[in-house]
Length: 158
Image 1 (tube, helix red, strand yellow):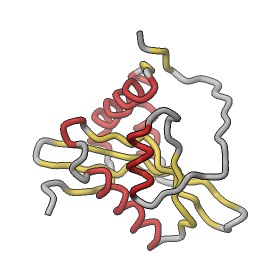
Image 2 (cartoon, rainbow, N blue to C red):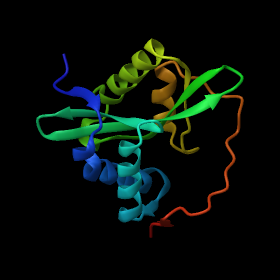
Image 3 (cartoon, one colour):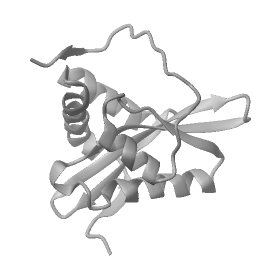
């Protein structure tokens, strides 16, 4: 039995979710994200549940992990693909099943609803995360992710 609970992210979690997102970007991509941009982005999603939601793991000390779900309409599948994003677990809580619990909660909710599948992208060199995702049953996609970002609000960390 775990000593944490899983719940939807709420307005009271905005500051901590913003910190998690900025910390994750620094750890995985060596990026410094602008606090005001990330905080507004977190708040924007919480205020627009039609775009997605956060799921958080919480214990007596506060939030210990989180992930964000956003929705993509698939005309090929006539339904929604749920994208896992902004995955973060506090370093001292890693390898204790926190992400596994978050993932299972998302998967259960997606299966109970109208979702057609789960997807995520992971930084190419983040082998530890890739291993974790594969252990949960996710497989490499046949797709390569390409992007054109217009405004990141981030700079490389020195």
